[in-house]
Length: 203
Image: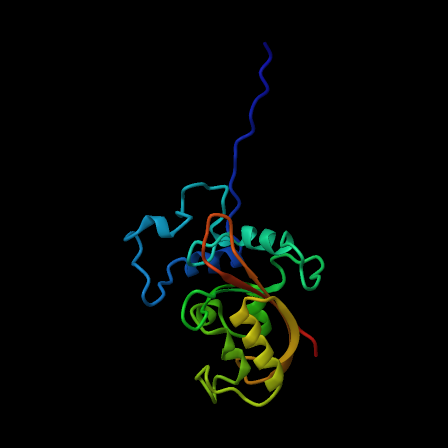
């Protein structure tokens, strides 16, 4: 019987986006168990499968492809996002932790805001509402788009999706208008409530 020879399997090297996410895997949030203390906490163990790139996972082990699928497949969306992939400026926040810390941000978000991914992960998403060089506290909110900030906070508290324009600040202090789309989701077999944020500079 003729046997078809199998081509050797090669694994591509990580790109910069994947490398950043791999570094983010080492991040520990305050109050979380240390690595190895509870293996059930992480749904991804680096090296378990060379085909599953570590760049597709946030520091808590969250699967970004599952996040995007949950966004696209959500029932009765309030608004349509259109075609969106990981090239969009993206953040994922944990709504079940105090301050709703960002647990994942991608290179596009870093490029948009000027902050490195390491600087963003673990922060309250409200830090963009004021120039951090002048007001590092997330509780200090400037009056720009104050109504939009209140609507965003209310939507997060009620776990409702929302899309609106809001004034944000880049790392260099530059003001920009951010079209924010915030979508709360739950992942399969995961009781945690997440908020997925898509960010677009509109000026």
